[in-house]
Image (cartoon, rainbow, N blue to C red; front, side, top):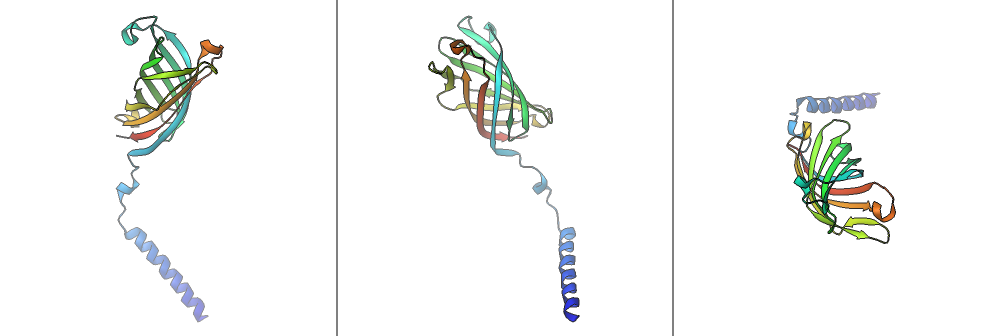
Length: 184
């Protein structure tokens, strides 16, 4: 009986000590704040061509240069599922893609992220009608809306898409990326 009382008292003492430590300790509010840097920002998206045509003010002389617009969806480690609208200019003689801009709108929050990418040349494989970049394309986060207003960061993007005139198939393009996302 004496051993049971001693055990019970020790358990009660440990419990009270733990409780006192919990209520008596200072809580660090900084530890509760989410980190403002997502150093492992990764994601993927697919999108389809919605329009192609001249935009001389943005892209230069037509028909050599045309503007392409896209819409689709994706997912990333910053905000989850998102819808994407993007546009870019392309030089039909050199396959140069330039002035690429995208807006990702997170489905859950409605917050947006604005992305711009460096110019790059797509390498076309006529045997399978696929175009892709030969090396990672650098891009930047150039702001946003809502909780993403003032966001910044950078990423390496990879593109792969079907060349519709080559095989007559209209398949979605795919992008995957990894980088760093800085919340304001």
